[in-house]
View (cartoon, protein in one colour):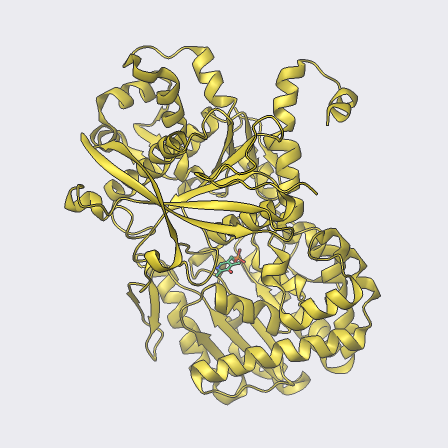
Length: 596
Ligand SMILES: *Cc1c(COP(=O)(O)O)cnc(C)c1O
């Protein structure tokens, strides 16, 4: 196994030509560890898990993101579930290493200085992926410019567009300053970083100043960019009013964007910008790819289904179990297929330990002692309306009857609502209200301040992972994958990844049908029916059979819905294959295979 060390300013084994082109992965947020609070949810955790898998595979990659000195936010909930937000206390200087190169980016006519910090992700074989965190908090900058890398998804549209300018254009310039341009494939993780295309174009045009951009120059940029869209509904795509664009980016860039027909309905739509400048585009699950193709019929859109990083999300008891029965699991997640050889009794014991660790953590945080023998349901994700946090509570009487008839249930919730998402905040209050009403009949706990550390406990320690998104809003979803690594089956609406991972009563259970749009009444009824007649009887009367569902979750879903497989697919379909296509002209599949 060759070692690839891709460290800017440390070109130990960095010999161009002896390896494939490196990937510059641009992302507005990234979830690496609980100590680096620069993520809000699934998009960021996916980015972090992507760098982990790239490091595992020795794929040369460098990630670019923003620093966020105040993180996303710290969530506090009062006794009625009212959320208040505080800044996250962290000292980047203590967690990250400084990068000496600096660049400037023009924003509102001012030259804004940008520096960077570095975190290194290490893979199973000791290969590295570096993550660069751009930072504008420098003395020479204007007071407002200094705040640009303070808050993730905070501030108004002016603030956001300025941030995206720092990320896209500043990121491209910094990589150039580090001597890395010319040998990079630029991956836009969602449209937030689409201005990198403009940055590349400026790089190409050089000092020549404003002039018409030729098709060849556009192709040059397109040849270098790939784009992953994550949002299945039009409202979710970043858009900026043209006046704001002119103000932030200045007349020259605005004219270029206009010349390149990047103005849609008087707005700069970051998804269209990314589509226009990417040679390869994908959605994050099969269904999501189809929906994106319908939304943007003028562009070919492929699908690469998301994953999660197996080692990152596997609890210690299961990691030990895997090491005992499947020693290859860390370096090649495909081997999880052989989880089928793990004795069910050992599965049960490992899960008992993971569950106890979760219940201990709950007791430490809330002083509430939950019952280790009660079927424990987990629901943790961003609190926003389409996730329907309260679907389980739509009929409290029915829930009470189920518990009386079949056995005890307890539910653990977690998730932050965006500070301006009133609907999301209301859902948290609704969970608190339901918890009060249910009282001792069915303990419900909403844990504060959902983050990576808490997610690790939850996805591994509960008995059932619940997901109730309104279709077709869940582009992929990843927390159910993390649960699967730990032998925790899902009960979920058939949207996103679950359409691909679900085999009824084998890997878990479905809520509702496979139609593209939700039928809320049918899904409510199905949720209760499935719990009462399928899941709870299995859990209480046939624990080994229940563990068997967990084992299939690992074998069928853990072996596939992981970021090692996902990054390999990006390698084959997005990063490297397409270059061969272009070079080979009309090359047949066979020729391409030989080339690989
Ligand atoms: C995995 C994860 C998410 C994403 O969960 P979904 O099921 O995709 O909504 C969000 N937040 C944290 C902290 C996570 O670990």
